Length: 418
Image 1 (cartoon, rainbow, N blue to C red):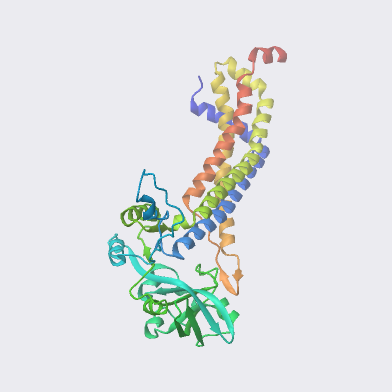
Image 2 (spheres, helix red, strand yellow):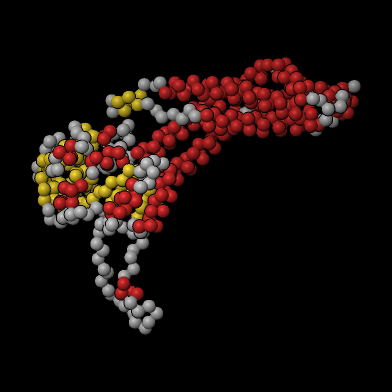
């Protein structure tokens, strides 16, 4: 019977009369929302930064000279369904390297906004001052590789382009150089499994840098593609293609499509990081579950406030029912009380959460002597999630006592008062 304006007026009057309890309940909600935004902003921000690092630290798609499944030996298909059984055959040796790689490279480069480059990778041993270390040497095109992966930001003492001026140059990681006792400008003796030995000069060092976001591993080195082909005795051969797409999220679908066309293993960054990405999803589920539980606990103040209001206003409820207000009207009054407290608390929580995020962003943190800026997610989505969770918790907290108020029998109350 009562209009929405009338119900809202009654609900606001109840809140004003119990102003102290209303303020306490509102502050509880505000603190819950504020810390929800601060914690989720840090966690989601760090997750987004980690995913960006995965995307930038390596090509979006890497094509390798291998198949998803091993090739079936021809002798096994020589007499299909016959009475002959072949045993103990020596498997046919596969010739490694990508066949028709120029056509595959052209196909990859034909993708809108894509960059692609060939590479030849293999195992070598590096010797210096009597110390020997196994190394994975990557022969690259320095003009393109820097655009495919975030290598340049981690180089110390030189650039990738230096490899073009010095075909005998090599770029190694600092931990590898430290283990063999070498430094920038020293000459290493590099030997491959093909029996070729070559002296190579260190032109730059790859610095392990958590802030830069690129690190390939301690035993990794980079050289010129044609130098690697000479060292491995494989002229005009490449065993990898590196591809960077305009849209990293399309890497999975693009890799599957091109793999179906060419047959080799086209591995996207999502496939290489599948376990990590699944872990991030589980982490996000746990995060929002914990944060929602915190908001639910914070909304207990709303439950307490509305319950106390119902207990104190039993006679008023009876009078309203006698005046013609329905059960739904009475329930709506107390639901409005809870929702108003939740809405005001959410707005105050937004302000608190913004202040906390700003304080975290301005915190003077350093890593290895370098200033560290924490990656924070301040997107509108976080505020929408916090607001929705807050209002949902407020609705649940207010509904239980509101439902109890709607079931009050006005006749019993009025008789008891008389």
